[in-house]
Amino acid sequence: MSGVISHEFEYYKPKDFSELSELLLQYKTKAKILSGGTDLVVRIKDGFEFPEIVVDIKSISELKELKFDGKNLFIGATVTFNELIESDVVKENFPLLWEAAKNVASTGIRNRATLAGNICSAVPSLDSGPALLVYEAEVILKSKDGERKVNINEFFLGPRKTVLKEDEFVYGVNVPLPQKKNGGSYVKLGRYNGEDLAQVGIGILILEGNEYRIAHCAVGPVAARAKKIEQLLNGKSLSDSLIEEAKKLIEQEISPITDIRATKEYRIHMAKVMLERGLKATVNRMNGKGPDYGEKLI
Amino acid sequence: MKKISFILNGEKRSVYVEPNDLLLDVLRDKLGIKSPKYGCGRGDCGTCTVLLNGKSVRSCLILAIEVDGQEIMTLEGISKDGLTGLQEYFLKHNSFQCGFCTPGMSLTLEEFLKKNPKPNEEEVKEAISGNLCRCTGYIPIIRAVMDYVKNRGG
Image (tube, rainbow over the protein chains, first blue to last red):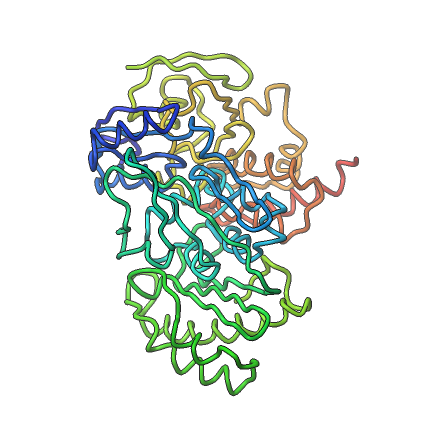
């Protein structure tokens, strides 16, 4: 395979929302939005996407914003994973999101890849998924007609399918600050640290008062919350026997497949191991003891 | 064809590109910059790494047209005035077998050591985790970085 792109397209770089909205309205599914290109360019090379126009949104200044107002973190559509990692605000207030960002590929990819692009690609293994799900983030979608907000729990419809309509674009993601003391962890199983997609990913957020939020990726068609496990754990202090009970529910929560990266059986087994390690690490972190954020948990 | 202009290794360059031309191909085939290599073509191996506005990126995944008005630095640029300190230590430790990954490694480390001048070994390993060495000669690379960091003073 040669490195060139054989498919031909036009390139647009709109300066503002109205220009962008017009292009999307005109070209609909024939337009593809480009920011980091770490997924889109590969998809075009592979012949999975063949847009008539590629719309580079990196000139729209509002989309570059990463801001925190004390209650809510706004992550604009062109904010990269390394920008999240380099933000002290993110590290201090949303350490689980920070840890998930650290787990995305390697620095050369994270300098380009965006969180918004990650959720728009909507692959089952997306590293940002579990963190956004447990923080109960909200995706802000815009089009020429206006704006709507979608809870991240309702954003993913299937592998590479989202609720995004053909004339809409992701403006940004809002992540609300949990109102209670909390701890989190993102446990990722991959083959090596550099580029590998998650074979299993689990995000855990525990809030003071024994409120548990757990989400997984790479073990079902979409990243999703593990509601049965949450229900079992909620209101209870963590104990070894409770963790064992929770692990028994894993098979009801996830539906992994066997593919080139791992077998179904291996993923189920590891999801249990990771749930246990993640829960223990999270409780320790909440109490100021646990492993530092960003340390490998598996 | 569209004309784009950007700063390449400190000099302003202009070149005509198609929207589907990749930065890697334009650098290598139109501008004669041969240090970035074509490896996997999908962002996995890091051998096409260049610095875009000081940040390491995959030139095989960037459209050339995107860098209009930006600044690109390649290995040719960082060693314009002779070998860099890190390159001296690569030589000292013989940190290459075939050398194919060396430009990408060097640029990734260039960015990394600016951000983190006194890294520990784990941090160095994490930093180059996206740069594959097909000869698997990672140990001398890590050794060179650690030795350089220890001895460069400052």
